[in-house]
Image (cartoon, rainbow, N blue to C red; front, side):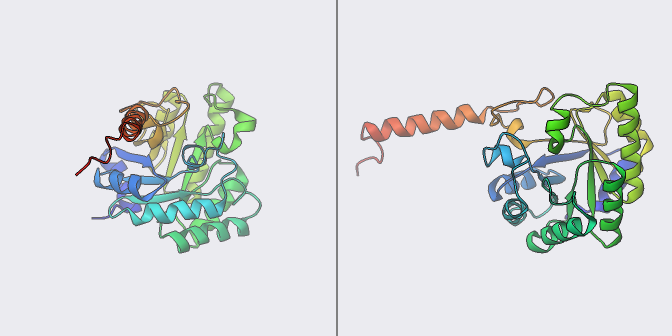
Amino acid sequence: MAVTIQQLIEWKQQGRSLVALTAWDYGIARWLDEAGVDVILVGDSLAMVALGHPTTLPVTLDEMIHHAVAVRRGVKRSLVVCDLPFLSYQESISQAIHSSGRILKETGVQAVKLEGGNPAIAETVAKLTAIGIPVMGHVGLTPQSVHQLGYKQQGKTEEDAARILREAIVLAEAGAFAIVLEHIPADLAAQITAKLPIPTIGIGAGPHCDGQVLVTADLLGLSDRQPPFAKVYVNLRQVIMQAAQEFAQEVREHRFPPSS
């Protein structure tokens, strides 16, 4: 049975942990779906892991849609959420509606995700949800603000922690169905999780969130730079290189393909 937004909220109430991972193509999405992942995020991290950019900023709305279409084809059960990329929603509410509408219409994903919790973003979330576009929020370390915040942990001072807590509450009140908490202290994430009626999904935010998400390339050992909070479950980079080297050697030695 397909995962729904309402189920995610019910699972929070039941204390069932949510499992989320990112995907950027059909194959990865299919395998994650078959593995039982609850939420598959077509994250703008694909700018780095699939397109080779140094940050998430260069990826375009058209590129996100292209990848989301492929991901959605591979999914039968998981809830699929697609990131709104940088400058596809910040200019105006009408821009956010247009971008979000394109994603839902052209890809078949069930929801969009956007970053930040300032008043303008909260107003955008309220408008999107009011017209039937489900929104996942994202506070703490927001990669689209890398030039302002860097990749360092957020919420370490009282003032910053209070701001992040306030943003999370405002996003929930605006209608977000879940919020990603990225790279914030575990005690702050626990406080936010306890206050919100909607699920929190942590990434580098400690064990007290309602769920956890990782960039799948980090989990598989495919990333050039590993975040301090990620865990490598397998080194596919080494496996792929070894397979390619063995193939190359067999071709050069005329052992592949084998003679009949």
